[in-house]
Amino acid sequence: MNFFVLQGVIELKESHPIDEDVKSKINIFLDRFYTNRIGIRVLINQHILLYGSQLTNHPHHVGCIDPNCDVVEVVKDAFEKAKFLCEQYYLISPDVDIITHNPYEMNRPINIVYVPSHLYHILFEVLKNAMRAVVETHSKETEVPKIKVLICKGQKDLTIKVSDQGGGVPYNKVHKLFEYMYSTAPTPNWKGDGTAPLAGYGYGLPLSRIYARYFKGDLVLSSVEGYGTDAFVYLKVLSNEANECIPVYNKTSSKMYDTHISASDWTQTKR
Image 1 (tube, rainbow, N blue to C red):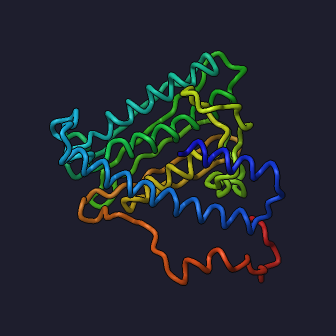
Image 2 (cartoon, rainbow, N blue to C red; image 1 turned 45 degrees about the horizontal axis):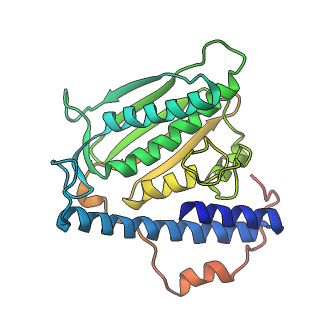
C-alpha cells in the first residue's frame, strides 16, 4: 500500500502546482492515515500471533511485543541492514560506535517493553539517512567518519541519539525533513520490484516519527549546518505510559482540512 500512496503523491506533485496550504493538509492527512494504518496492523498482528495457529518465532514475545526488547541488538541489526544498502549504492559506508548509559540499572543491558519491528524501522531510516549524508559529504576522502550512537535509559525516557558528520542542513529546512513531499535526494525510478531505493521519496523520516509517536515517543532532529546532524529517538521506559496515540475524528479535525493558513502577524514569515 505504501508504494501506491507514494506513486499518488509523486504524480500529484508532478502534475499540479502545490502551495504551502495544500502541503500542510496533505501532511496532516497522511500523518493521520499512517497512524491509523499502524494501529490496525498492530491489532491484527497481535491477534494472529496470540490466537492464530502459527506461533511466533520468538518464544519470549507476547504477540508482536517483546517484554525485554534489547535496544542495542536492534540498533546493531538496523545498522547492518543500512550498511548493506549503503554499500550497494556507494561501495563504502561509515562504521558505528555504540555507547550505552544505564545509570539507574547499573551493569544491566538496556531493555524495554516495545515492538521490535517498530524500533527497527525508526533506526533503519535514521541510520540510512546518516550514512548517505556522511558518504556524500566526504566523497573525496578515503575514509569516512563514524556514526556515533548513544543509548541512555532514564527513569522515564529511553533516548537514542544518532550523531553523524554529514554536513547538516540549514535551520530553516529542518522542519521540511518531516514533510512527505520533500526530499534532499532525487526521486528514484522504483517500480516496487523488491529492490529498495536508498532515498528520494521523502517518506522515511515522517513515517519514522509516526512510529515513534505511536507509543508516546518522538523523533527530533537537531542539525549543525556545515558539520552534521543529531537525531534523537525518545521512547517511554514505563510500559503503562506508552499508550497508543491515535487520531480522533470530530469537528476540530475536520477544520484542519477546511481552513486556510492564516496570515502571519510577524514581519518575518519564513524561518
